[in-house]
Amino acid sequence: MIRAVEKWISDEELNSVYSSTYWNDVEQERSKFWWIEGGDYEKCRTYLESGHLMHEFQRSIEYIDALRGESLRVADLAAGIGWTSVLLSRLSKVAEVHSVEISKHRIGPLFEQCVEMFAGEVDKIYRYLGSFYDLHFDDRSMDVIFMSQAFHHADKPFKLLAECDRVLKPGGRIIIVGEHYMSRYKIFKRILTSLAMNKKWTTNFYELFPPDEELGDHYYRVSDYYFLFGSMGFKLQHYSVASDRLIYVADKSME
Image (tube, rainbow, N blue to C red; front, side):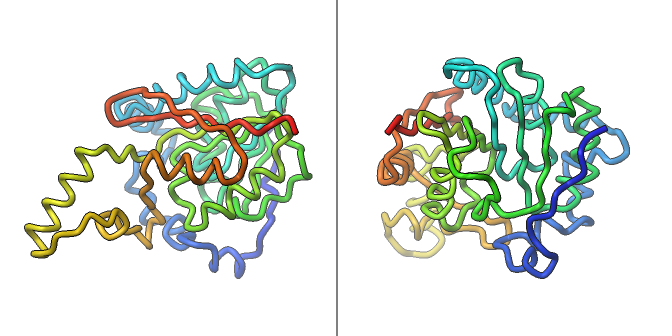
């Protein structure tokens, strides 16, 4: 039996977390591909496959396998319904998966259904209801931090990276998948759209791609990722998995 969810945050505190209202709206969530409460796994599986998310995850495994050592401790931040956490638990090099999420029903009943869907190793999995800005992990306690469709939901990316740096061991690794790839073509197309609709010429990226304050989506260029991670002392590399998909791998120095 999977361990119970550990609450890091009160209901009142949860309501004040950026974009948490949207992700805790159960009625809104029922219409999504992630809603597997009734055991309707096929819809979710199809979405993961057709949306290339499963392909990205499979590619990301090689960046875990490349790490030295065994018995790795992995923190899966903004874990959602836990499909990445469950698949991570099945890796032989992974000893523990610590899943953090702000959505009650995702980290709760939907996560438990996901364990069934992908036959997770429940002895390895730990779940927490809380914010990825405030991780209740010890300093230098994690070997890997994994984020799938998560990093771009941070409205305070430096704060998130500072917390990741705190809990990551020297030589540890951050793996990020599911981010928006803002190609030159996409940016140029938005410039023309803005000109046509607003009668305004602008090349300001953040005017062209403002954040979605309800969903918490933010848009970053490849150069922004390098600036963010480089300023925190991480060595960042990115890898193409499709024309509009990149994986980011950030390594912490051995100090």
